[in-house]
Image 1 (cartoon, helix red, strand yellow):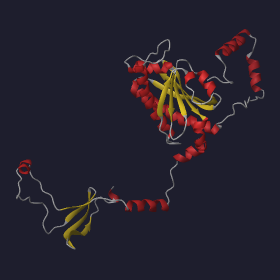
Image 2 (spheres, rainbow, N blue to C red; image 1 turned 30 degrees about the horizontal axis):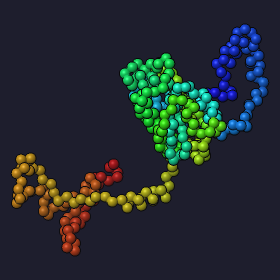
Image 3 (cartoon, rainbow, N blue to C red; image 1 turned 45 degrees about the vertical axis):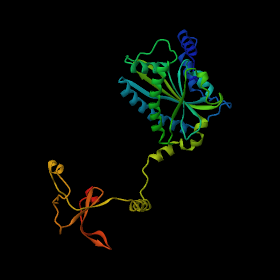
Image 4 (cartoon, one colour; image 1 turned 60 degrees about the vertical axis):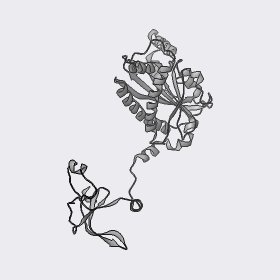
Length: 334
């Protein structure tokens, strides 16, 4: 990511050159580290996310990384390793400038939260997936290029599965339903918020076979603003604890169960016949049942025999009188 506290490759080369030539010594660097450090604060881009909220987002997307790691490993049948590298907050303009061109930028929504979110995949990862799905070894081309229509259709399916993992990871905080919209290859055409708006960037380090690259999830602050209070470790841990069972909960559950309808069947009897006898049955034939006319009948609740009864009449209607309660099917036997 491009940022004020990140060195460019040219600055790193210059620093290494200074160390090798003796212009800057390792002792000077160590002495500078011991001095009191002053953190630079830019009032034009105030921090929107607390450290606790950043930590919660990190844990959420660790689960997301595990889910897509499992999916891609099984789908591509090759070695896949994905883990969360960092969670940073910066302006949307800084994020867009850090993306390669071309890239694969999926813009999706996550109702009921408003606004758009970006899932960006490095071209090396995308083409390794495509090559593997088309029967190759998973080698990305030397020079990245935009996706063809067929390749985009394939990647849409992969992205849809990845967003299922995103939905599963986020349900611990809020139930969202991610929906893919447009897929862009030029970062300049992916404008989901004004350039100066703050966003949180979750960066995943991905390795598929021999191909390596980054997967970035860009979530604007405006999208997360309604649920900022839920993005705390305390709230997240509280959701995972088991609710204490109280007498009030038990009474409510019993009351709901008592209003539940269940089928009640009185079985007059059973008979066993051959298929040939069944085919020869005609009007007037008599089937002899295994039960006696003066014996008890079975009362079946759902699929279990629960009572014994005797038939009779009540007010001109057929009825049964319970004579015995069967222990079979009791809750103690479950």
